[in-house]
Image 1: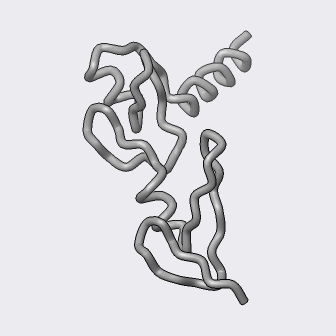
Image 2: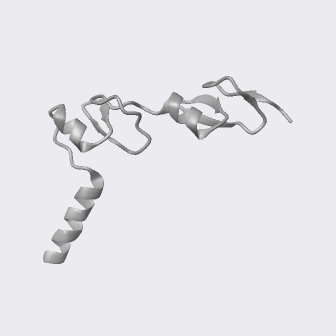
Length: 91
């Protein structure tokens, strides 16, 4: 059984997993460590983004509200999908 070292917390563990991002392999012992090390932060409120978020002009935002606060016009996808479905019903 091979022990590998988590690059986030330094724990040596036999059940690590790897995440490949931009062609580079990263080793972690938990999703918590992977998220803390790999997830982007919102450009507006600095929240750790573990969901889809949104992107505008090369910046990442946790939600449409933060993007709008920085002057970008975006619509949260679930809201847009709901809008599209409601408009289909009306026509």
